[in-house]
Image 1 (cartoon, rainbow, N blue to C red):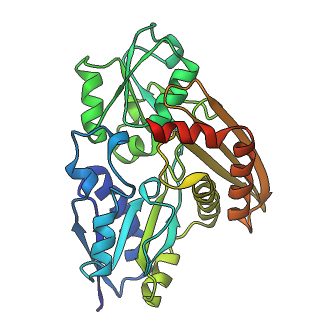
Image 2 (cartoon, rainbow, N blue to C red):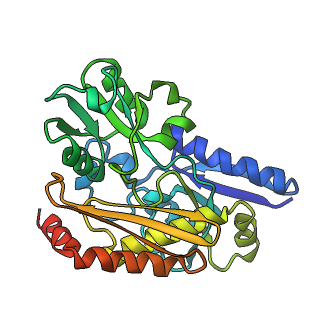
Length: 306
């Protein structure tokens, strides 16, 4: 019986995510033996640094990719939003598991977003969330956070913050969705590219594991994710500007919405593009070109100077 070693970050959320993928694979391939290895990443070690100040890209995946390349693990499961748009040489994104709810949510004891008093303190680890929040509610105070979801939720329960904005998928996977005060509407809060989806990465030359990963691939999620990542890449992979994108597949049609903003939400451009689900990358590139024509590159350049 071949033993497949699967790598994951060691957080509670990451382990739950990885086990959800392994559960599917064990059902499909009972002839294989799967074991899980926890790997600490640069992003995990830098818990005291604001997330927007962490240097480089891929801080939550680089160590996992190194373990893949040196043979310590055979497969890695990532939160897709953490994966750089350029995959390391000799590795490939082999599959994207079915996406959970891609929306952001507000966790607060003080009601929904529209009910929060001016000056309320809202925590987030995302410049994208900060920008969209301040664009909609410039009277609120935003505090940038680090730490896992449990740590952020405690800041609400102890009264240190009036609320936090986190991913709906994370709350659902952690069994904390009962604490959600509001699912934030997509017309105001677009998610990060890949939010709510899991990416499965393998060595490019391992045909057996590439085929195994493909068994848990969800084609509509894959198409949406490819478009979102192409959009991000066309705007400049790794840029520090708040960038959001969400693709949705209906039949053979892919609709992609995207946004670029400055960190304070003063400058915000948003648009959409429809196209064939058979060529999702082209849809992402066309949407990026639309936003570039509306000043997205200037917003990104200003963000890089900060």
